[in-house]
Image (cartoon, rainbow, N blue to C red; front, side, top):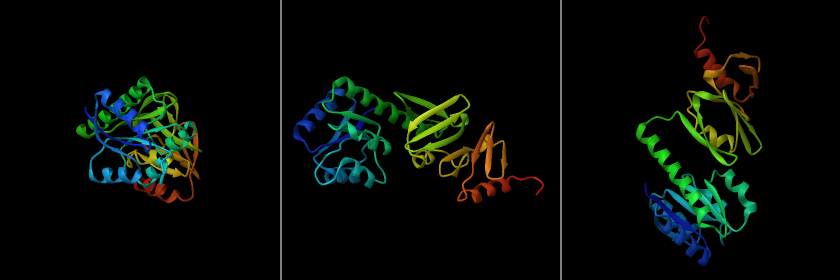
Length: 236
């Protein structure tokens, strides 16, 4: 597949370097090269863009602040000379974080990640099925089937996905992960917990029991959970 992308960077030399990497990769259709967030925003509004290479430190508006303004965004690969912004970038679910000067090898690794992710999304749309997703865990991408998930636990900037095969940790927000889960199979029952409805063993007081795990129910989420229980209750 061909990936339609844009480059957003305020430095002329950095733009030239990125343009060469993009064109040499052979998998990109470079739609535009932008000097700032305003130019990029116009392109994103007018055209379908699959991937954005985005610098962080730019005059007028930082790259991460620009990302926060986008309700719908393409895949994003951060390109920057400042490695200390990595955590902030990943909290916004960027695909990768490239520190300048960017080597061809490191660039191609990020480019292949983008291609794999877009091909996965395309296959998912074509088939109409979605029974798994991928997360970045440590230095690899891990495939997670919905049917394997017991519950999900949030702790500061990390999510722990408890599955029948073990635990996986990822740098995600609970909101971003909740949006990817089918609402008929998963339910948020606490500010820090999402459970698989299929895996519930029992409901006792203010806790959900899933196997050997006791998971607290938040007061703000209890009514929705009880409605689901009552809808399926036999012998009311």
